[in-house]
Image 1: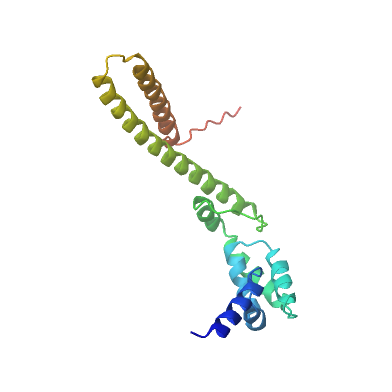
Image 2: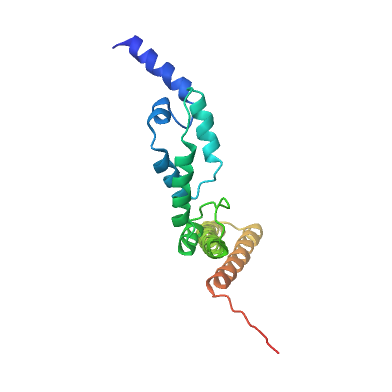
Length: 182
């Protein structure tokens, strides 16, 4: 084994560990393509500052104009309303990079659906846990003479289960909205 080579590799790795870009990436990046990718992901424009900081560590510069051009082109794709819904539904963060309200509205709709789906999943998990605990308590109740405390626990779990079932039912119903016009 070549220990000097290993030591050199680890040394270089430790120097670049704090950077998001390596010296090779700073020297050889296609800044337009990197900006395009950042824009397509809806990354904050502040990412450019991080690239500049990273490359400055190696005494290299970022082609800011190329990155901004690619970034704006990427944002044009990212900021489409249908993408807003997809981003929200996936539970992804939105960094306020789009100037059109349609994107934000669709993002909020998708994010609300994401939160509803997440809550439904949490309810399903908790219902399964409650059912297992009730089964366990039923087994203990059948084997004990002092059942009062276990029956209280079971009733508490049954009440929680009913509340969760009600909440799940409400979440699954579409919102009904009424408009009154005079």
